[in-house]
Image 1: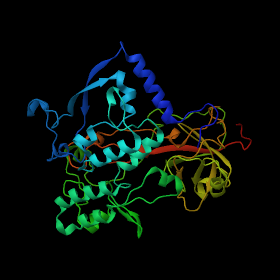
Image 2: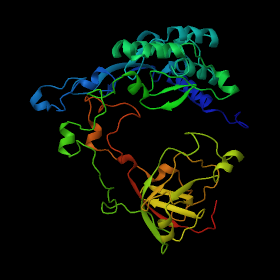
Image 3: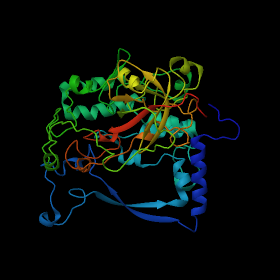
Image 4: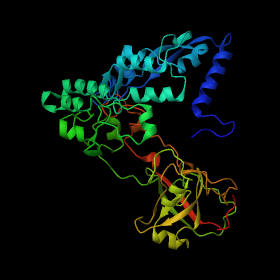
Length: 424
Protein backbone atom coordinates (compact mmCIF):
# COMPACT_ATOMS: atom_id res chain seq x y z
CA UNK A 1 0.00 0.00 0.00
CA UNK A 2 1.07 3.62 -0.47
CA UNK A 3 2.11 5.04 2.94
CA UNK A 4 -0.43 7.62 4.13
CA UNK A 5 0.42 11.24 4.89
CA UNK A 6 4.10 11.68 5.76
CA UNK A 7 4.72 8.04 6.59
CA UNK A 8 7.49 6.19 4.75
CA UNK A 9 8.05 2.55 3.95
CA UNK A 10 10.52 0.53 6.01
CA UNK A 11 12.77 0.44 2.93
CA UNK A 12 12.90 4.24 2.72
CA UNK A 13 13.41 4.57 6.48
CA UNK A 14 16.41 2.22 6.54
CA UNK A 15 18.00 3.89 3.52
CA UNK A 16 17.46 7.28 5.15
CA UNK A 17 19.14 6.08 8.32
CA UNK A 18 22.02 4.60 6.30
CA UNK A 19 22.55 7.89 4.47
CA UNK A 20 22.66 9.87 7.71
CA UNK A 21 25.01 7.32 9.31
CA UNK A 22 27.37 7.51 6.31
CA UNK A 23 27.31 11.29 6.48
CA UNK A 24 28.08 11.43 10.21
CA UNK A 25 30.76 8.74 9.94
CA UNK A 26 33.08 10.94 7.89
CA UNK A 27 35.91 12.08 10.13
CA UNK A 28 34.45 10.15 13.09
CA UNK A 29 34.31 6.42 12.28
CA UNK A 30 35.60 6.22 8.71
CA UNK A 31 37.04 2.70 8.21
CA UNK A 32 37.30 0.28 11.11
CA UNK A 33 38.23 -3.40 11.43
CA UNK A 34 36.26 -5.99 13.38
CA UNK A 35 37.34 -9.47 14.42
CA UNK A 36 34.21 -11.53 13.75
CA UNK A 37 33.61 -14.99 15.23
CA UNK A 38 31.54 -17.39 13.09
CA UNK A 39 30.17 -20.62 14.61
CA UNK A 40 30.77 -24.06 13.16
CA UNK A 41 27.95 -23.76 10.66
CA UNK A 42 25.59 -26.42 9.35
CA UNK A 43 26.02 -27.51 5.70
CA UNK A 44 29.67 -26.42 5.64
CA UNK A 45 32.91 -28.40 6.19
CA UNK A 46 32.88 -27.04 9.75
CA UNK A 47 29.91 -29.24 10.67
CA UNK A 48 32.21 -32.29 10.76
CA UNK A 49 34.92 -30.65 12.85
CA UNK A 50 34.02 -32.88 15.83
CA UNK A 51 32.50 -36.00 14.25
CA UNK A 52 33.19 -38.31 17.17
CA UNK A 53 30.75 -36.56 19.48
CA UNK A 54 33.53 -35.79 21.94
CA UNK A 55 34.33 -32.18 22.75
CA UNK A 56 38.09 -31.93 23.38
CA UNK A 57 39.26 -30.27 26.56
CA UNK A 58 41.73 -27.54 25.70
CA UNK A 59 43.74 -28.41 28.81
CA UNK A 60 44.29 -31.92 27.47
CA UNK A 61 43.97 -31.69 23.69
CA UNK A 62 46.32 -28.79 23.10
CA UNK A 63 45.60 -25.24 22.12
CA UNK A 64 42.17 -24.37 20.64
CA UNK A 65 42.05 -24.21 16.85
CA UNK A 66 39.60 -21.87 15.10
CA UNK A 67 37.23 -23.83 12.91
CA UNK A 68 37.78 -27.07 14.83
CA UNK A 69 37.16 -26.72 18.55
CA UNK A 70 36.57 -22.97 18.38
CA UNK A 71 34.55 -20.68 16.10
CA UNK A 72 36.19 -19.48 12.91
CA UNK A 73 37.54 -15.93 12.95
CA UNK A 74 37.80 -13.34 10.19
CA UNK A 75 39.03 -9.77 10.05
CA UNK A 76 36.29 -7.66 8.45
CA UNK A 77 36.81 -4.18 7.05
CA UNK A 78 33.88 -1.82 7.65
CA UNK A 79 33.80 1.48 5.76
CA UNK A 80 31.10 3.33 7.68
CA UNK A 81 31.13 6.20 5.18
CA UNK A 82 29.99 3.76 2.47
CA UNK A 83 27.13 2.05 4.32
CA UNK A 84 24.43 3.81 2.28
CA UNK A 85 26.16 3.23 -1.06
CA UNK A 86 26.66 -0.48 -0.33
CA UNK A 87 23.10 -0.87 0.90
CA UNK A 88 21.83 0.54 -2.41
CA UNK A 89 23.85 -1.81 -4.63
CA UNK A 90 24.41 -5.52 -5.27
CA UNK A 91 27.94 -6.33 -4.12
CA UNK A 92 30.42 -8.43 -6.12
CA UNK A 93 30.81 -11.32 -3.66
CA UNK A 94 27.68 -13.10 -4.90
CA UNK A 95 29.33 -13.55 -8.29
CA UNK A 96 32.88 -14.10 -7.03
CA UNK A 97 32.25 -16.47 -4.12
CA UNK A 98 28.81 -17.73 -5.11
CA UNK A 99 25.68 -18.13 -3.04
CA UNK A 100 25.57 -21.23 -0.85
CA UNK A 101 22.30 -22.72 0.41
CA UNK A 102 22.06 -26.15 2.09
CA UNK A 103 25.68 -26.81 1.10
CA UNK A 104 25.10 -26.16 -2.64
CA UNK A 105 26.81 -23.19 -4.31
CA UNK A 106 25.54 -21.38 -7.40
CA UNK A 107 27.00 -18.38 -9.21
CA UNK A 108 24.52 -15.62 -10.21
CA UNK A 109 26.73 -13.94 -12.82
CA UNK A 110 23.99 -13.90 -15.45
CA UNK A 111 21.56 -12.54 -12.88
CA UNK A 112 23.92 -9.70 -11.94
CA UNK A 113 24.14 -8.67 -15.60
CA UNK A 114 20.34 -8.89 -15.90
CA UNK A 115 19.86 -6.73 -12.80
CA UNK A 116 22.35 -4.16 -14.12
CA UNK A 117 20.36 -3.87 -17.36
CA UNK A 118 16.99 -3.75 -15.59
CA UNK A 119 17.84 -1.56 -12.58
CA UNK A 120 20.80 0.50 -13.79
CA UNK A 121 24.21 0.78 -12.16
CA UNK A 122 25.75 3.08 -9.57
CA UNK A 123 27.61 6.01 -11.14
CA UNK A 124 30.25 6.36 -8.46
CA UNK A 125 31.25 5.67 -4.89
CA UNK A 126 31.79 2.34 -3.19
CA UNK A 127 29.20 0.58 -5.40
CA UNK A 128 30.36 2.11 -8.69
CA UNK A 129 29.31 -0.03 -11.65
CA UNK A 130 27.24 -2.40 -9.54
CA UNK A 131 23.51 -3.06 -10.08
CA UNK A 132 21.38 -0.51 -8.22
CA UNK A 133 19.03 -1.62 -5.44
CA UNK A 134 18.07 1.89 -4.39
CA UNK A 135 14.28 1.44 -4.59
CA UNK A 136 11.97 -1.13 -3.08
CA UNK A 137 10.94 -2.40 -6.53
CA UNK A 138 14.55 -2.94 -7.60
CA UNK A 139 15.24 -4.76 -4.34
CA UNK A 140 12.26 -7.03 -4.96
CA UNK A 141 13.58 -7.74 -8.45
CA UNK A 142 16.90 -8.80 -6.90
CA UNK A 143 15.20 -11.14 -4.40
CA UNK A 144 13.24 -12.82 -7.20
CA UNK A 145 16.27 -13.02 -9.49
CA UNK A 146 18.58 -14.53 -6.87
CA UNK A 147 16.25 -17.29 -5.63
CA UNK A 148 15.94 -20.63 -7.37
CA UNK A 149 12.25 -20.76 -6.45
CA UNK A 150 11.54 -17.82 -8.76
CA UNK A 151 14.51 -18.12 -11.15
CA UNK A 152 14.64 -21.53 -12.81
CA UNK A 153 18.13 -21.05 -14.20
CA UNK A 154 19.59 -20.92 -10.69
CA UNK A 155 17.42 -23.85 -9.61
CA UNK A 156 18.70 -25.92 -12.53
CA UNK A 157 22.32 -25.02 -11.71
CA UNK A 158 21.82 -26.03 -8.08
CA UNK A 159 20.13 -29.32 -8.99
CA UNK A 160 23.00 -30.08 -11.39
CA UNK A 161 25.54 -29.58 -8.59
CA UNK A 162 23.43 -31.75 -6.29
CA UNK A 163 23.18 -34.47 -8.97
CA UNK A 164 26.98 -34.68 -9.04
CA UNK A 165 26.83 -35.88 -5.43
CA UNK A 166 23.70 -38.01 -5.57
CA UNK A 167 24.50 -39.83 -8.82
CA UNK A 168 22.97 -40.03 -12.29
CA UNK A 169 20.10 -42.20 -11.07
CA UNK A 170 18.76 -39.48 -8.81
CA UNK A 171 16.87 -37.68 -11.56
CA UNK A 172 17.89 -34.31 -10.14
CA UNK A 173 19.30 -33.05 -13.44
CA UNK A 174 15.97 -33.74 -15.15
CA UNK A 175 14.16 -32.03 -12.27
CA UNK A 176 16.34 -28.97 -12.79
CA UNK A 177 15.69 -28.98 -16.54
CA UNK A 178 11.94 -29.07 -15.89
CA UNK A 179 12.06 -25.70 -14.10
CA UNK A 180 14.99 -24.07 -15.94
CA UNK A 181 12.79 -21.81 -18.08
CA UNK A 182 10.64 -20.52 -15.20
CA UNK A 183 11.16 -16.88 -14.29
CA UNK A 184 9.14 -14.58 -12.02
CA UNK A 185 9.64 -10.80 -12.06
CA UNK A 186 8.11 -8.25 -9.74
CA UNK A 187 5.37 -7.18 -12.14
CA UNK A 188 4.16 -10.80 -12.23
CA UNK A 189 3.54 -10.71 -8.48
CA UNK A 190 1.64 -7.44 -8.80
CA UNK A 191 -0.71 -8.89 -11.40
CA UNK A 192 -1.70 -12.10 -9.58
CA UNK A 193 -0.45 -14.72 -7.11
CA UNK A 194 2.42 -16.64 -8.73
CA UNK A 195 3.40 -20.19 -7.88
CA UNK A 196 7.05 -20.83 -7.08
CA UNK A 197 8.99 -23.74 -8.52
CA UNK A 198 11.06 -26.61 -7.17
CA UNK A 199 14.55 -25.57 -6.07
CA UNK A 200 17.60 -27.08 -4.42
CA UNK A 201 17.09 -24.54 -1.61
CA UNK A 202 14.22 -26.61 -0.20
CA UNK A 203 13.67 -30.26 0.63
CA UNK A 204 10.28 -30.46 -1.11
CA UNK A 205 9.17 -30.48 -4.73
CA UNK A 206 6.59 -28.04 -5.97
CA UNK A 207 5.02 -27.73 -9.38
CA UNK A 208 1.74 -27.17 -11.24
CA UNK A 209 0.76 -30.77 -10.53
CA UNK A 210 1.58 -30.91 -6.81
CA UNK A 211 1.77 -28.85 -3.63
CA UNK A 212 4.91 -28.51 -1.57
CA UNK A 213 5.61 -31.39 0.80
CA UNK A 214 8.86 -31.56 2.79
CA UNK A 215 11.55 -34.18 2.10
CA UNK A 216 10.03 -35.33 -1.19
CA UNK A 217 13.36 -34.62 -2.91
CA UNK A 218 15.05 -36.86 -0.32
CA UNK A 219 12.62 -39.73 -0.74
CA UNK A 220 12.03 -39.50 -4.50
CA UNK A 221 15.51 -38.48 -5.67
CA UNK A 222 17.81 -40.26 -3.21
CA UNK A 223 19.18 -37.10 -1.72
CA UNK A 224 20.70 -37.85 1.71
CA UNK A 225 19.32 -36.06 4.73
CA UNK A 226 21.62 -33.39 6.20
CA UNK A 227 22.74 -35.57 9.12
CA UNK A 228 25.88 -37.46 10.08
CA UNK A 229 24.44 -40.68 8.65
CA UNK A 230 22.59 -39.16 5.69
CA UNK A 231 19.43 -40.80 7.03
CA UNK A 232 16.75 -39.80 9.48
CA UNK A 233 18.11 -40.86 12.82
CA UNK A 234 17.05 -40.26 16.39
CA UNK A 235 19.99 -41.50 18.46
CA UNK A 236 22.49 -38.71 19.11
CA UNK A 237 25.80 -40.19 20.23
CA UNK A 238 27.30 -37.04 21.68
CA UNK A 239 28.94 -36.69 25.06
CA UNK A 240 26.74 -33.80 26.17
CA UNK A 241 23.56 -35.58 25.08
CA UNK A 242 24.63 -38.68 27.00
CA UNK A 243 25.42 -36.67 30.11
CA UNK A 244 21.89 -35.21 30.09
CA UNK A 245 20.25 -38.52 29.17
CA UNK A 246 18.89 -37.16 25.90
CA UNK A 247 20.48 -39.39 23.27
CA UNK A 248 16.91 -40.38 22.31
CA UNK A 249 13.82 -38.12 22.34
CA UNK A 250 12.55 -37.82 25.90
CA UNK A 251 9.72 -35.99 27.61
CA UNK A 252 10.68 -33.15 29.88
CA UNK A 253 7.89 -31.52 31.89
CA UNK A 254 7.74 -27.73 31.82
CA UNK A 255 9.77 -25.89 34.40
CA UNK A 256 7.96 -24.89 37.58
CA UNK A 257 8.86 -21.23 37.28
CA UNK A 258 6.98 -20.36 40.47
CA UNK A 259 9.34 -22.56 42.47
CA UNK A 260 12.22 -20.68 40.86
CA UNK A 261 10.86 -17.43 42.24
CA UNK A 262 9.06 -16.16 39.16
CA UNK A 263 5.53 -14.97 39.85
CA UNK A 264 3.10 -13.26 37.48
CA UNK A 265 1.73 -9.79 38.26
CA UNK A 266 -1.55 -9.95 40.15
CA UNK A 267 -2.51 -6.31 40.60
CA UNK A 268 -6.20 -5.75 39.96
CA UNK A 269 -7.06 -9.43 39.50
CA UNK A 270 -7.44 -10.67 43.08
CA UNK A 271 -10.24 -13.17 43.57
CA UNK A 272 -10.59 -14.05 39.89
CA UNK A 273 -10.92 -17.72 39.05
CA UNK A 274 -7.92 -18.89 37.06
CA UNK A 275 -6.42 -21.96 35.41
CA UNK A 276 -2.73 -22.67 34.82
CA UNK A 277 -1.99 -24.17 31.40
CA UNK A 278 0.77 -24.89 28.93
CA UNK A 279 0.93 -22.10 26.39
CA UNK A 280 1.82 -23.02 22.79
CA UNK A 281 2.21 -20.68 19.79
CA UNK A 282 1.75 -22.67 16.54
CA UNK A 283 2.19 -21.21 13.08
CA UNK A 284 -0.67 -18.93 12.29
CA UNK A 285 -4.03 -20.08 11.07
CA UNK A 286 -5.37 -18.82 7.74
CA UNK A 287 -2.61 -16.26 7.41
CA UNK A 288 1.07 -15.61 6.80
CA UNK A 289 3.75 -14.13 9.02
CA UNK A 290 2.90 -10.50 8.34
CA UNK A 291 -0.32 -9.13 6.91
CA UNK A 292 -3.21 -6.78 7.51
CA UNK A 293 -6.08 -8.55 9.25
CA UNK A 294 -8.39 -5.63 10.01
CA UNK A 295 -9.94 -5.65 6.53
CA UNK A 296 -13.44 -6.99 5.94
CA UNK A 297 -12.29 -10.21 4.26
CA UNK A 298 -10.04 -11.26 7.15
CA UNK A 299 -12.58 -10.26 9.79
CA UNK A 300 -15.14 -12.40 7.98
CA UNK A 301 -12.81 -15.40 8.30
CA UNK A 302 -11.83 -14.72 11.90
CA UNK A 303 -12.76 -12.43 14.81
CA UNK A 304 -10.79 -9.33 13.97
CA UNK A 305 -8.28 -9.47 16.79
CA UNK A 306 -6.15 -11.73 19.01
CA UNK A 307 -7.71 -14.98 20.21
CA UNK A 308 -6.61 -17.85 22.47
CA UNK A 309 -7.94 -21.37 21.94
CA UNK A 310 -8.72 -23.33 25.12
CA UNK A 311 -10.49 -26.55 25.99
CA UNK A 312 -14.11 -26.89 27.04
CA UNK A 313 -12.99 -28.20 30.45
CA UNK A 314 -10.58 -25.35 31.17
CA UNK A 315 -13.17 -22.80 30.03
CA UNK A 316 -15.74 -24.28 32.40
CA UNK A 317 -13.31 -24.10 35.33
CA UNK A 318 -13.00 -20.33 34.96
CA UNK A 319 -16.58 -19.75 33.74
CA UNK A 320 -15.55 -18.56 30.29
CA UNK A 321 -17.88 -18.78 27.31
CA UNK A 322 -16.84 -18.68 23.68
CA UNK A 323 -15.80 -15.16 22.60
CA UNK A 324 -15.45 -13.89 26.20
CA UNK A 325 -12.53 -11.62 26.99
CA UNK A 326 -9.75 -13.42 28.86
CA UNK A 327 -6.37 -12.44 30.18
CA UNK A 328 -3.24 -14.60 30.07
CA UNK A 329 -0.48 -13.62 32.50
CA UNK A 330 2.89 -15.09 33.40
CA UNK A 331 6.21 -13.66 34.66
CA UNK A 332 7.18 -12.70 31.14
CA UNK A 333 4.15 -10.60 30.19
CA UNK A 334 0.43 -10.38 29.59
CA UNK A 335 -1.96 -11.00 26.69
CA UNK A 336 -5.58 -9.85 26.43
CA UNK A 337 -7.64 -11.77 23.88
CA UNK A 338 -10.98 -13.35 23.13
CA UNK A 339 -11.52 -17.00 24.01
CA UNK A 340 -12.18 -19.65 21.41
CA UNK A 341 -13.62 -22.56 23.38
CA UNK A 342 -13.08 -25.72 21.35
CA UNK A 343 -13.38 -29.46 21.89
CA UNK A 344 -10.25 -29.92 19.76
CA UNK A 345 -8.08 -28.49 22.56
CA UNK A 346 -6.87 -30.90 25.27
CA UNK A 347 -7.31 -29.81 28.88
CA UNK A 348 -4.24 -28.09 30.27
CA UNK A 349 -3.02 -26.65 26.95
CA UNK A 350 -3.94 -23.46 25.08
CA UNK A 351 -3.02 -22.23 21.59
CA UNK A 352 -2.36 -18.69 20.49
CA UNK A 353 -1.55 -18.75 16.79
CA UNK A 354 1.38 -16.46 16.17
CA UNK A 355 1.50 -13.06 14.45
CA UNK A 356 -2.07 -12.02 15.16
CA UNK A 357 -2.80 -8.44 14.25
CA UNK A 358 -2.63 -5.78 16.98
CA UNK A 359 -4.49 -3.06 15.08
CA UNK A 360 -7.97 -3.98 16.33
CA UNK A 361 -9.38 -5.42 19.57
CA UNK A 362 -6.31 -5.01 21.77
CA UNK A 363 -7.66 -3.69 25.08
CA UNK A 364 -5.73 -2.73 28.18
CA UNK A 365 -4.80 -5.37 30.72
CA UNK A 366 -6.41 -5.40 34.17
CA UNK A 367 -3.25 -6.91 35.62
CA UNK A 368 -0.86 -4.23 34.38
CA UNK A 369 -3.00 -1.35 33.12
CA UNK A 370 -1.06 -1.46 29.87
CA UNK A 371 -2.00 -2.66 26.40
CA UNK A 372 -2.20 -6.44 26.09
CA UNK A 373 0.81 -7.86 24.26
CA UNK A 374 1.32 -10.14 21.27
CA UNK A 375 1.75 -13.92 21.35
CA UNK A 376 5.44 -13.65 22.25
CA UNK A 377 4.68 -11.45 25.27
CA UNK A 378 4.36 -14.69 27.27
CA UNK A 379 7.34 -16.59 25.86
CA UNK A 380 11.05 -16.42 26.44
CA UNK A 381 14.16 -18.10 25.17
CA UNK A 382 15.68 -20.73 27.43
CA UNK A 383 19.15 -21.95 26.50
CA UNK A 384 20.26 -25.51 27.25
CA UNK A 385 23.82 -26.83 26.97
CA UNK A 386 22.68 -29.04 24.09
CA UNK A 387 21.92 -25.89 22.08
CA UNK A 388 25.63 -25.10 22.14
CA UNK A 389 26.82 -28.30 20.44
CA UNK A 390 28.69 -27.55 17.22
CA UNK A 391 30.72 -29.37 14.61
CA UNK A 392 28.56 -32.49 14.89
CA UNK A 393 26.57 -32.87 11.68
CA UNK A 394 23.05 -31.58 12.08
CA UNK A 395 23.95 -30.31 15.56
CA UNK A 396 25.71 -27.28 14.13
CA UNK A 397 24.53 -23.68 14.04
CA UNK A 398 22.36 -22.28 11.27
CA UNK A 399 20.04 -19.31 11.59
CA UNK A 400 16.41 -20.39 12.12
CA UNK A 401 17.46 -23.97 11.43
CA UNK A 402 18.83 -25.63 14.52
CA UNK A 403 17.37 -26.63 17.84
CA UNK A 404 17.42 -30.14 19.33
CA UNK A 405 14.74 -29.20 21.88
CA UNK A 406 11.60 -27.13 21.84
CA UNK A 407 11.98 -25.46 25.21
CA UNK A 408 11.88 -22.00 23.64
CA UNK A 409 8.13 -22.67 23.33
CA UNK A 410 7.83 -24.34 26.74
CA UNK A 411 5.77 -21.71 28.53
CA UNK A 412 3.24 -21.90 31.32
CA UNK A 413 0.64 -19.19 31.80
CA UNK A 414 -2.33 -18.38 34.02
CA UNK A 415 -5.63 -17.70 32.24
CA UNK A 416 -8.59 -15.97 33.85
CA UNK A 417 -11.86 -14.46 32.72
CA UNK A 418 -11.51 -10.71 32.79
CA UNK A 419 -14.10 -7.95 32.90
CA UNK A 420 -16.11 -7.81 29.70
CA UNK A 421 -16.18 -4.02 29.91
CA UNK A 422 -12.88 -3.58 28.12
CA UNK A 423 -10.94 -0.33 27.99
CA UNK A 424 -9.10 0.56 24.82
